[in-house]
Length: 455
Image (tube, rainbow, N blue to C red; front, side):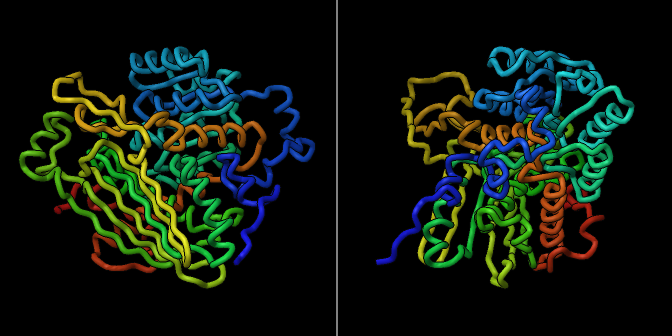
């Protein structure tokens, strides 16, 4: 009988105790601050003051996640909607995650010396102007920051993502690109155990699958290709392609150790261009959303072929949908190897409630994000910010900025993610497999984003 590898201080078993990515755990496993020139700052101010740009659904998820982050305080909120900014600041205070106030401008928020880092959670079409205002404040000397973390995607296309990265590099800011699903506890623990047990004894994994599916976004701008940058592929496949890459990458190895070589993708409109649903969508989201004239894709799939450092071919399959009807948001992943497999599904939550026809309450999302029903047998995702990875993600970026260390994902990685998404759009539009990266991808804008896509 084969003997399983035993846990040690440097093994993957040990790293699962921390949700921080294993690629940077070696620098964070023990607080040897004397090696870090930022260590004096950490001792003087062991907490990170945070300002958040945005007051929508995503910003509120981060506020809930900060309940589980012990070394940060949310001190500021800015949004172009002053009323919503004030309400989000009030939520921060209610949750006890920081004495936040609403600011009249980004520059004013950055000028507060107590705010050390900014979380970019605004809409895609405002990304560049938001970053430009931050950089301008720093260059004029009216504010200083130690870090900036950006929600997905870094830009609506590669050109925008590269501009965002250049702007931040110009002022020397430490930067982190946020992909919450990589930090989901089940993803991190499953990955660590698979590699420590299955891969160590029988060989590396060769196939990963990931999917994110729900019935559609909350806000009108998500549905508008020109504002969002595309449809469901641009909105959600960033998560799925990174999850498969993360699962297929050996813990401790750099992200670049897995090189994409070919990509095959498909996009479709399965639900929301049907006349009755297009009409319903326009009614709920406003006249700016008309899928009878300018639709975006509500389904996308991609297969990415990777080459490993030792020349092997491994595959990643990603699927995303705005046309999934079930209990609510469903995140799932699988990892397969020669003698093992793992699977994850957020709707297999372990907690279920049943409500009869007589329970006719108000619609909401108190059981699961993107909830589609209020009666029957319903799964409940307890502690969604932790389950979806937001809590561990925020903890990681806070600690990286406090210690002056490079986060596990940076804006450079964010640029590469956008490049993968644009390559997927190119493959879908051309109807064929493309070598990666395809020629012209850095200047490419999808037909969906140009309002020219006809399903």
